[in-house]
Image (cartoon, rainbow, N blue to C red; front, side):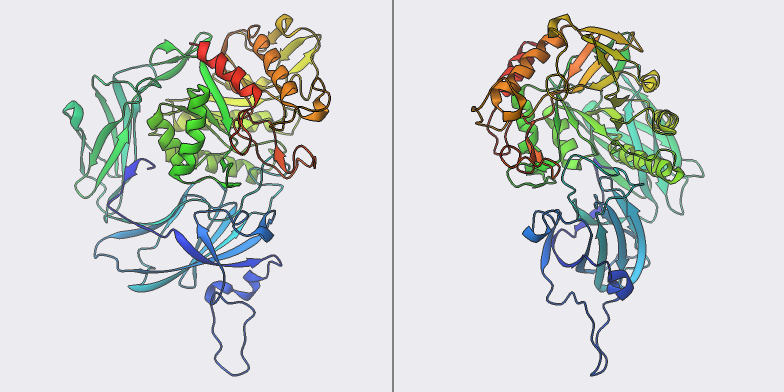
Length: 569
């Protein structure tokens, strides 16, 4: 319940003791037990006493220079005091840990979680002690063949406890989940549900929206679930008026207060409609990185920095690539009137034939949707990026994932991003069978950078596998080092702003040829860290496709996109 305010929350953010374990011996030594010497000849080759600290939330790579490119295990420890009220339940909640986490409380294992960008929690009601408690978390960001993402991705693999850690105290029977959003095809009717968890599952439920004088009553069944359906004259959320309502959900034993907006996003014919009216998606790609710090973004301040830059560019949508970003990004975007595209890290080189990988995909999808399903600003679920039809079981697995997503949430658009189109004789042949199951076509094309133009941009032709569907250009662009004006400005090798600007000038002409164009999304807002970018003069460990440098300086291409968005209605 990302936008809910629980009864009592205690933050465990701050300084945590940390042991770096490059040899991977911590499991063998059982460091979570924190054994102490009992005899004169006893000793242990680990200790949290005297250990350095790492800030949580935060990645470990940016906090210690020797860990800049580290991929391995770090053990974290936090001591906390707690006294649980009688009849209450206590949960330990992690916003995200990259990539794998094993969690121990007072020497006993609570459980494990895999996936670096979605939340998880453990109930510790019968395990927390009155007074002092020791929490140990093993964090490992090593890449795996069967991971999500797998190998070969184009961003720094920030490891660590990268988002908030909290203790949440709830009632004995509490509101575990809820869904309150407009029906897909309506502008006034809400459909959803409330789910209770506890020994008193059958309860009366009241939903209040004070600003609308709305009171709705229902009752949960013996499994704690109640369906919801009511109508009201909502002021609809939009980029021009990002209206949010205070919504109070009450059971007999618990209360949740949320900020919820209401909007309808749908595809009709070859257009995307927001609240029944066509909308052109003026977007930009963003990585979850604070460019000025060279660190994983996680705070409200980080979100404001990135999102205000998108607003200045003229955007009405941000593509949060290539994984679910932190809750602050989603919350602040919604407040600012920025639509959000949220994406799973199913990114190239995924082993779709592996049943364990498919199970992980489904779990990660559930975690992403569960967290943000009540955020009206989230309008698109993107379920993959740049996967390949020739990979065994790829299309079947992603179609099944699409069906699962529709069952979980029918109020948003679903897409998959591909770069499989053929470009021959100045013609795009967009043929991927995956688009049969999508609401709209999303494609990445880097004509002018990775692929040369084959004719005049204004003369480009298109052949679409689904000619009736809207088309979104989800990535385009090229690299330029800010201030690079030397060498041959008509050659890519010198990473000049002039060459990047020419790519954008040509792309803007190309857009006029795209059938059913519903939006565009340059790659990307800021230059960002990527160890794969090894040009020592121009890249220096950064992907330089940003419209802004990592210091926030505007490249020539920024002004071209800004002007384009200004005239686009």
